[in-house]
Structure formats: structure tokens, C-alpha cells
Image (cartoon, rainbow, N blue to C red):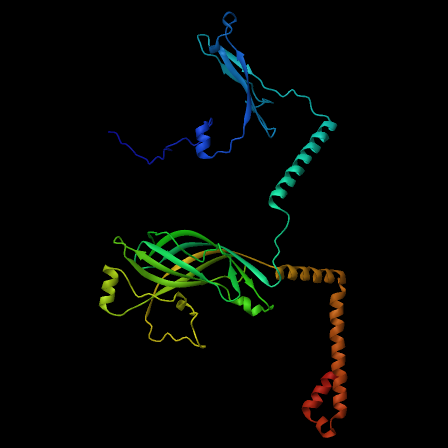
Length: 400
């Protein structure tokens, strides 16, 4: 009786390593291939009477070099290892031993210094060449201007009713904010099918976007910078009949600090009561939508101090996750850093006298308060001085 066990073996469909790539392979796969010169050292290992036959020629050593001065020797030097074995083909099958040694003379100190100076000169020239391409002038913003750069990504969306989701989004700039003419303030993601993870249906978008804006203030007022741009978005679903449904509205306030931020925004959608609305949404798509997307937060057409949503029916839907990398550039950051360094230098120069000076300041302030208390006591009537509270305060100052 025989038993057979089958295992799932993963067999690669292509070679993992291509030792001798062809020109077409290098061109199609974009392989970085430096031009190299190759030299072969061959040996005729045939019998004495049959020399000159190509079948008896064997490659002993291969030497390759490129423009950077890199030398590749194959096989490597033996050093303390055993010699390499070469077995000939034929009736006798002779075995030859090959030893590869480095017999070059060591360089003198003067030659090493000369070569080192040559490489240093080469590196300096290459560095100057790169600097000429990039430029040494750092772009400095004018006073009162803040540059805001964001590299963001719409990572996931989960918790929505229907499948095949996509997202519309746009950016609203407050007052004193502007962007480049080539900057796109809106976008739309690809349609993404959801995948069940636990109890949620998750759509993995991984949709990248970038944004650059400038804040210009005529007066240096920190309260104005608190009005950051807002990203409004709408999640929609698309069925096989090309009917779309509104799944949720949400907004994202741009982070006020630089660095990496992971933000999850909850969404909601308008709800229309009644069975007819639910049947229309299920069969032919379509659902109540917002004419002004800024109504998700605070609409721009608001007049007054209060916003009332009384009587407006909504339903909580899913959530959308964002990953943001923010960069801020301003002259104020540089000036604050310089002032901090200057204050630190002053503290370092003072050294241990700073603590002693603080104690002296406290004692001087206490002496001034004591003198003022004495002057006030002399001007008070005798009857008021003998009261318990005033006598107790004066006793405390006298003891000190």
C-alpha cells in the first residue's frame, strides 16, 4: 500500500538571477549596466601532439574593468585556500590545479599620496558640477508669508453600505491663502472594490495627491494663521448599471503642525424618510445630495453667528483614512531659531551665576515689599493696627 503526500511548491516562472543579460533584457528591464572591458586568459590543455585544437582550450581567469577603475577577477585569488581544479574532457580526463595570486608590487607612499590627491580633485570637480546643476541659492520667502506643502494619500474607506467606491474631493482656501495657477484644487480617485476584513468591508485606495499653498499676511497676526485650508470629500458608489449613489460627506482640516499625520474622518449623508426613497436608492441609484459641499462644516454663505440644522435628517455612514506628510516654510521659523540660539548663548556665558542672580532678585523683591508694608503701617490709624488680621500679617513680615 502506497501513500502519496502532495505539497504546495512554489516554482518560479522565470529565472531569479540572470548572470549574462542580453542587450534586449537590459533595454527592456532598465538595468543599470556600465560598459566594461573583458580580458580572458586561456590555456591549451591538450596532449603534446595535439596542440592548437579549440576543444582543448579552457578559460583560466576572466578580468573585467569599467570606467570607474573597478577590477573584477574571476575566480578570486586563492590566498590560503586550496587551488582550483580543472578537469579536461576526453578519454584521459586529466586534472589540472590552478592557483591565482596577486604578485603586483605594493605602491610606494609617494604614489599613494599622488593617487589620493587625484581622487580628491576628481570628487571636488564632480561636486562643483552637481552644485552648478542644482544651484546654491536657497529660496527665501518674504516676511509674513507661509508656504504649506502637503503630500497626502487616501488610504482606505470602510463601513459603507454599497461596493465599488470612489471619492470626489476639493480644497477650499480661506482668506489670505493662494495657490499656484498650475495647482489643481480638486480630484477624483479610481473605483475600488471592497475586501472583507473582520466585520468591515474595506476599500484600499492608496491614492496619492499633493498640494501647495501660500499664506500672505499684511500684518503679523497669529490668529489669522489658525484658518487653515479645508479638504471636502464625497464618497460615492457605482453599480453594474452605471448608477451612482452618495455614500457619505466629510471634511479634513489641514494639520497646523508639520510632520506625518494619520487622520480618520467620519462621514454622513442626507436622509430622506419614506419607502420610496429607499427603493429608488436601491434600484435606480440617486439619493439626496448637498448643493454646497461646505455645508458639511460651516458654509461660506453663512450670515450670522449661529448655524441651525434643525429638521435636517442625516445618517452616519463609514469613514475615510488619510496619511499626510506636511512641510511648512516661513521666515518666522528661522528668526525664532536664531533668537533661541542667541538666548542659549547668553545663558551659557552666565553659567552658574544665573541661579544666584535669580535668588538675589527674589530677596530684593521681598525687601521692597517689606519696606512698603512698613510705610503702609505707619500711615494707618492705631485702632486699625491692633486688629487681629493686620497684626498677624505684620508679625509674619517681621519674622522674615
